[in-house]
Image (tube, rainbow, N blue to C red; front, side, top):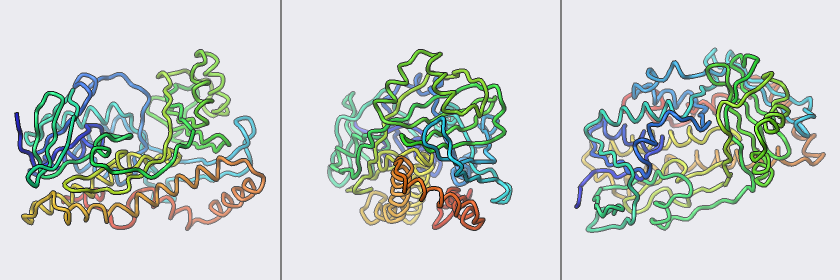
Length: 408
C-alpha cells in the first residue's frame, strides 16, 4: 500500500504535532507517524513533565487557538530567584532576582503540564482533515526514490512525500537513517523530575539553586504545587530515586531549603539522563530535523521545548511560503533557508547551557569568587537584566511570524 503526501513527520510529540497542525491548517497534506498508541497519547496519567514556555511560544500557541483552551491550567511566573551554594545545606550570599515589572509587567514565563498541552494539540489534529495521524506505527526505512522520499512503516505501508521531518526525539532514529551525526558529549548527569504539593504558597515564584552536582529548579504549577528538576551525577540520581518515599521526601525537602514548607509527592519521580547532542546538519536531501532530534541540550535554562517550537515556527514559515510561490518544498535550496535561520540560535543556546552548567557545577575557590562577581554584576545592572529577560522571551532577533502571534 502506498500513499502520497506533501510532508511526512516522524514523531508525534509536542514539536512534531505542532508542525503537523500548522502545515495541515495551511493546506498541506501531512502524515504524522507516532510509535505510541492513541490511548497512551491521550492518557490523563501525569509523569511530572512540565514546560516553562516563553512569550514567543505563547504567541504561537495563541495563534493556533490552543492557549485559550489551556489557559486555566497555566501558572504564570512573576519572579525568578537564582542562588548558588556549596551544597543544599549551605546557600551562599550570591543571589539574583528577576521580576515581571522589569519587562512591562508581563509574566517572565508560563508553566504548563505536558498532559494538558499534548491533549489539546491532539484534539486540534483530529479536527484537521489534511492530517493523517498514524499511531502505533514505527518506521522501518527511509530512502530517496525517483526524486521523492519514501518512508516504509512496520505494517509495510509506504508513504511517498516531498519532504520528511525527523521529530522523534533523542536519540533520533530518523536522523541516523539519514546518516546525520551528532556533536556533543555525555554530561554523566541526570535529572530527577517530579511534582510535589506543598504547605506554603509559591506566590508565582520560580527558584533555581546552583549546586556543585548540578542545578535544582523549583517551578510553580497551579494548585499549590511545584515541579522540580533536580540535576546531579547519574549514579547519585539513581541512588536517591531508589529511596523509599519518606527518605526521598526528606532529601528533597532539604534540597528545597524549606521554601515550600512541608511537601508531599504529587507524582512519582523519574530520572532522565542528560546529554549534549547537536546535529551536524539540520537538513539533507528531502529531509529536515526539528526539536530534540536536532538539539538535545542541558535543562539548566529550561529552554528545550521553546527551542523546538522556534524550529517549528521557522520551518513551517519556510515550507508554507515556498508552497505559495509554487516551489518544490523538499528542494535543497528551500530546506537550507530553514537551516540558515536556525543554526545560530541552536548553537548559541547549546553553548550557553553547556558553559553555564560547567561554570556552576565546579566548586573551585576561584570559580566561586567569579560566580559571586557575575551575580553582583547582573544584580546591579538593570539593562543587563532586561536584556537577559528579553533574550529568554524568544522575541529578539529575526522572529518568525507565528511567534509574534501573526499569520504566515
